[in-house]
Image (cartoon, rainbow, N blue to C red):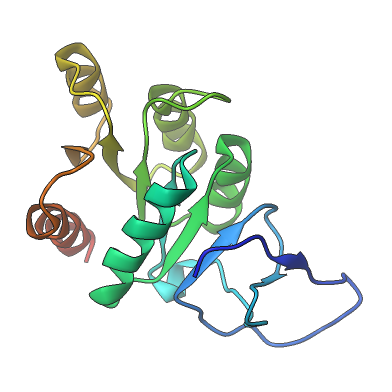
Length: 164
């Protein structure tokens, strides 16, 4: 379940372990409501998910979790970029329409911070010019929210397979 975590005190030193889903509010170790630790690194094969709509984060996280993908979910573009710069995820799924920074800008900044990160766009509006810009900027796939789960998961799998 997604939920704001409590920040782990800097003085506490514990080993990292994997967790399936966590809502990240700062690029730091955090506890979820179940008090699991999160590891944000390439070794986990985590998917970084960015959307300002918590219900979309929750639904998409659960869908990805159901097929064994580890998800680090973000509502803040700035936090997402900070963590991506530090942890260089293999795959990022980003929304376009967000209040803090639009997804095309996030994609451009992400490309500079973590050039090896593959991007999938998941957005509410099918704007052909936005689709073209995202794909020209290197997006692996572009989906409209409400897409069939199987189609979305096939796109995620194809992108993940192209990484390995």
